[in-house]
Length: 160
Image 1 (cartoon, rainbow, N blue to C red):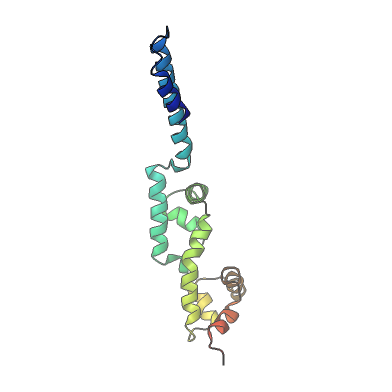
Image 2: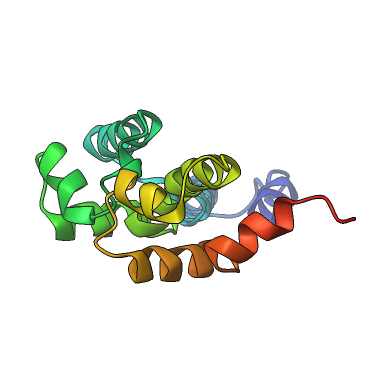
């Protein structure tokens, strides 16, 4: 805005010897300032088509429910034909979140659905979700649900 005001004030000073050069310089300065402003504002939004494609493919993969059994970042990197490091860096740069957090956000609703089904034992759920052990399953639940699987189930029961 300062440059616009300076230009407006100088428009009437035609008696200056280097009027055209000065106006050209002021206009150029104003363009640089505007460019800088936009470059800073859009700096975090410089994602390539490849980056957008990777993020979209990852979210599409997770939408299939595959995270029920596959929660390892390397699995998704392999499916997307990129390295684990590239996938992790790209997702973090674009979204501000880790790939693991994306996977967990897709997995937790599946986990809750299984835990809501009282006909399934905790061992059956751990097996269906491809956890290596019941203790790892329990730690995962505690981390993502804030309580153990059995406590989560108890919290669903009506209180009498």
